[in-house]
Amino acid sequence: MNVQERIKEQVSAHPIVLYMKGTPQFPQCGFSANAVQILQACGVKDLYTVNVLEDPDIREGIKQFANWPTIPQLYIKGQFIGGSDIVREMYDSGELQKLLVE
Image (spheres, helix red, strand yellow):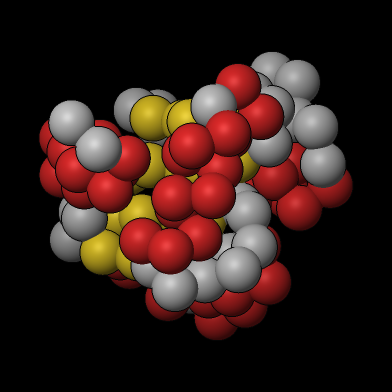
């Protein structure tokens, strides 16, 4: 299975997927930490995370998958949502919370 197929399988198999640097317990960048904090503030319990620092193929492949150059990247129900800034904006407007309960 190539990296694009692996990513597609991950975002299809889990309702909420965050590609990040590090883990929710030990984020390795401020943007990843920010995304995790926002999702926790929304009450997300079943967050599936992928530490891109552990897999260079995923780290590069995820950028191509969504045509988005930065990490973290959030997917909800298989749909690419965005990176840290977009997640913050959606949280502040209440849009993210609506997506998470639909």
